Structures are given as C-alpha cells and as structure tokens.
Length: 167
Image 1 (spheres, helix red, strand yellow):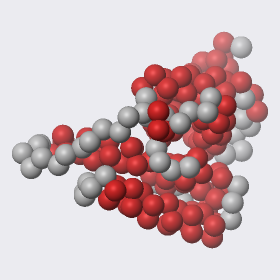
Image 2 (image 1 turned 90 degrees about the horizontal axis):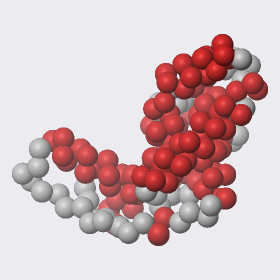
Image 3 (image 1 turned 45 degrees about the horizontal axis):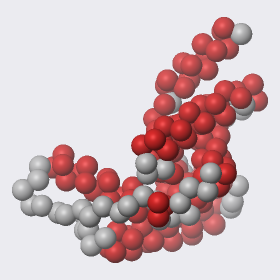
Image 4 (image 1 turned 30 degrees about the vertical axis):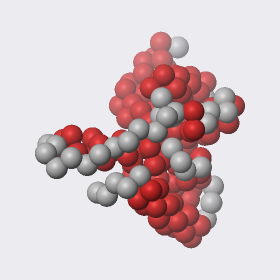
C-alpha cells in the first residue's frame, strides 16, 4: 500500500496546478477554493484504483477534478452572488505585473458568472486541450465543443465589458 500511496502523491505533486486551476475556476472565495481542492484530492484518491493508465494521468485528473467541482458546486449550492463584486480600475501608472494580476482577477470574476459547463470548457481550453480532447472530457461531440467554446469566449468578453475593463 505504501508504494501505491507514494505513486499517488508523486502524481498529485506533479499535477497540482490542475487542482489549483479547477478550484480557482469554480470558487472565488479562498476558503471555498481550499475546501474544493481538498475534496478533489480526496476524490482522486478514492478513485485512484480505477485509473488503469489507459490515458495520461493528467487527462484522468482533469476529468475527476471537473466532475468533483461540478458535484461540489451543486451539493453546497454555492452562489456567485454571495461574493461581493469589487471594482477594478485601470491605472496607467501600474507596473505590468500589477496590471496582469488585475486582468487575471477580472477574468476570474467573469468566469464566476459562467455556468459549470462553460467553466469546464474555458478551463480545458486554457490548459491547451484540443477540441477533440475537450469533447472527450465533457462527453460531447467535437463540433459541439467548438461551438460551445466560441459562445463561451464571446460571453466572457461581454461580461468583462460589463465591468468596463478592457485588456
């Protein structure tokens, strides 16, 4: 059992950014992100014996993490309107790092307004997944993945414009 645990921990450490990114996409509050991250790791461990190396570990991990986030989000009935919106101002004197951090914050705030499937689409797209891989992970056709992804990108742009923030 120790060998299996060690293998699991090594794979989790190697791919921990997936857990962080999924948690960040689905939860805005830091405490909620931590709770979701723990739940993802727990679900990964529970289902680790079912991982048969038929695909890359990271692909399997994406699927488990996103499904866990969807269930967790529904189960706890977390609402995006529980988190107060902050106003972001574009100050010309800010350094590039500050501006990029602000852009990222606005982007994540916009993502909070997406539904669960749209969040999954954007997450997989940002991870560099192909349309085929996105379709496989979400259980939809490749054409449907392309259409939904394009609509979701447009929706994010409209949300960001609503915040009157331009990149």
